[in-house]
Length: 120
Image 1 (cartoon, rainbow, N blue to C red):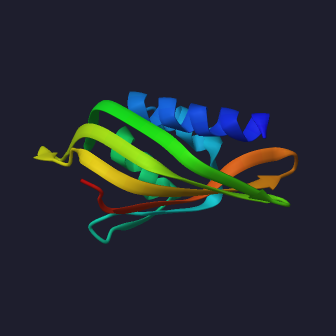
Image 2 (cartoon, helix red, strand yellow):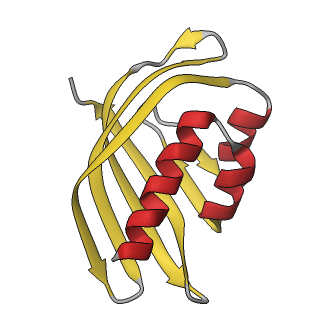
């Protein structure tokens, strides 16, 4: 469980910094990100939000409420809070966030981030 918690902490820190190089290491090649307004991004698209400067993050916090590990897969459910802008438009808020990770070749990688509608 400790390596998985490290992955979750590293992901939160990388998103808060808007760090595509750090995220590249944490996300699986077959990563998919699903957003609250219907967007679906593959790994390159997720990283490009930061590379191009489309997403500007002032604060980003993610707190897991439940984490399940089943064999080589893990599901973490939590709440994400951010103050951010996407292409100049405010996208701040609090959302329900589900993160799915798999252990491959001895390392945990994130394969999916699912952001729900604004929680509050």
